[in-house]
Structures are given as structure tokens and as C-alpha cells.
Length: 525
Image (cartoon, rainbow, N blue to C red):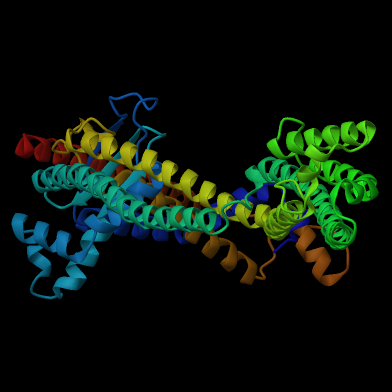
């Protein structure tokens, strides 16, 4: 055999002619086998249902749907529920499916076979198609419509359950958050009650009260100092009057009359002036004691100027109501009153000091209280916002649940119900015959070229020269006899007959297939 690089089309044609039976026989056998195989396969029919996904009838601006997952995910979830063993077994028993398999397979295996016969394909975003295949065209259409109705029912059920489940979940969460909100409100109220007066919003009031108390403290401190000075003055006056009264008594006893008065009038006048100064420091000029002392001083000054008449001497005696003894009692009473006033002012000073300390402590604690209160308010605000958000979601979920119950939400609608198929879905006989023809040609060609490769005969001068390595000087032409001519013609007739036979077989197969199809159509119709 020549090398592949040295062969031309004529060489290939010669090989085909030499090995024609190795090509024709496998072709005929495989084609016939393919035809027989295609007609022995059971006819499988397929029915389909087109389902439209209708959007909700209420605008989403008014009611937000609770189901927002993509259609592919939802169909996968629904198909898993419908493809469950319980659902498919109920359909098998209801429609008496797979009777030929019930004696050889378990129910689980039959259910698995039914799963293989069901197919689901999504068509865009608003539709999907269900397929079911089987041997009986009427049953196939019935099962396809049955599965479609299950998809519609399951979708409504799933959406309603999801809406109700969402509402129940939001109810529980709302109750939990409400309880948390009430607890935080109680904690915030208790905190304000426990720290009343030291809250951030009371800073200005505390500062104002602190300023007022400090002014009061200063005023009371001044009054207290005045009272203490007045007490010292009164004590000194009482002491002076006591000494003066004792001196006046001794002089009166020794000299008596006007002479005693004249001798002691000037010291008494000075003492009265000191008493007047003490009274004026405490009382106004209209006070009775001040008026009496002033009158007494005027009278004594007039007497001293007149020379001290006898009729006035009795007025300066120690028993006079304006004598030193009487003034001493008055001053002692004033001293006692001053002591009480000092104690009262000291008490008020201590009280104001304590109040100032309280307000100062409040002012100092306000920054820390502000941080604590801010933390409580922040938690309360977050919980309140969460509660309001859950409340809004709950109301929307209730609307969505009512919408699903009234079937106003998204739902499935059969757009194209399954019909009884008119021709089988499988087997595809023309395709099988074409594949068998291609396979036969391939096997025959492989056998022919394999036999040619194994054949070492010399087919021309070039093969001989390559083999012996010497040039060929002369050749003897092939002598063709009448028998050779007859045998050649006979071979040609056989080849033509074989070719026509294969062609006739293919045509007959197509005609039989057509009549079988028409017969099946008439039987189904």
C-alpha cells in the first residue's frame, strides 16, 4: 500500500472499489439493525404546561410583598415539596401510573422514575414550563395538568404560610421589644427620680440656687458679725452702767441732795449718751427706748445748765425708771435677745453651708449623671426606633397576609394547559437511522482501509520499484478476456443492485414510519 502522503483521490477511489463489500455489508447490517432498534423502542410522549407568574394586583407602594425571593428559588422550593414521595405516590395511586413497573420495582423506585419523567424550565422572569413524559398520551396530558394545579395550590399555600409566619414572628418580636422598652422606660424614670436635682437639665437651676445661697450666706455672715459686735457693745455698756450705778449710790449716800447730783451728773450724761449710741445701733430713732433716753439726756443737760434745782433731784435717783438700774435690766434683756439672734444666725449659717455643699455636690456630679443618662437615653431611643420599625413591619405583614388570603398577591396562572400529544417525543427514528447510516459507513470505511493497509500486493510500477529498489524496464499489460468483461459487468450489476437495495430499504422504512405515525394519530384522535 502506498504511503498516505503519496496517495491521491484516484487511489482512494480504487481502494473503495476494491473493498466495496467491506463497506457495503457493515453499512447494510448496521442500518437494518438501527431500523429494527428504532421500531422496537417504546414510544414516549411528552406533554407540557406553560404557567404565567402574575404580579400582585395591589401596588407595591401600598403593600410590600412578604415573598421577595427570585422565581428560580421559589420554584425550586415548591418543586421539592411537590416532588416529595408523599405527593408523587398519591398521584401514582390516583391515576394508576406505572402499572408495568409495580410488579418489578418498589414504590420508592417507581417514585424515582416519575421524578425523572418530570422536568421544569424557567422562561424568563414571568413564566415557566412543566414537562411530563410517558407511554400513554392521554395520561401524560392529565399528569402534566395535575402537576401544574399542584404548583398553583402549593404557591398559594406557601405564600400564605410565609405571610402568616412573618406576622407571628413579628408579633413575638414586638412583644419582646415592647417589654424591653417598658423596662428601659422604668429604669430611666427611676434614675431621674433617684438623682432628682442632679440632672443635666437642672444645671442652670442648681447654679442659680447656689448663687442665691452664697448671697444669703454673705448676708447672714454680715448680720452675725454685727450681732457679735453689738453683743460686745452691750456687754461693755452693762458693765459700765453697773460700775456707774455703784458709784452714784455711794456718792448720794455721802453727800445727798443736789450736790450729789451735781457731782455725778456729767458721768451719768456720758453714760446715757453711750446707751443712746447702743440703742441707735440697734433701733431706729422712733423706738420708745431711744426716745426716752434722748428725753432723759435733754433733761439732764438742761438741769446741769440750770444749776441742778431741788425739784429735779428726784429724777436722777437710782429708783427712777431711767436710772442706771433700769437701763441695766434693759441692756441685759437686749443682750439676751442678741445672744438668741446670734444662735439663730449661726444655725441659719450652718444650714445654708450644708445647702451650698449639697448644690456644689450636685453640680460636680452632673457631668457623670449626664453620661449615664445619655447611655440610658441612647439605649431607649434605639429600642424605641426598633419597636416602631417592627410595628410598621407588622402592619405591612398583616396587609400582605390579608392580600394573600384574598388572592390579590403574586400567583401562578395556567397560560397554556397540557394537550394530548400527537406524536411521540421518543424515539426519534429518522435520527436513529441517520446515526446508524453514519456508523455503518464509518465502520465499513475503517474495515476497508484496514484491509488495504494489511494487503502488501503491488498495485502499480511505483510499488514494485520502491520494493526492489530497481527501475522497471518493461511491463506486460493486463489481458482482458471476454470472461473478465462478463465478470466486471456482473460485479457492476451487483453493486448497483446493492445500492438500490439500501436506498429502497431506507425509503420503505420512511414510508412505514409515516403510516405508523398516521395510524397513531387516528387512534389518538
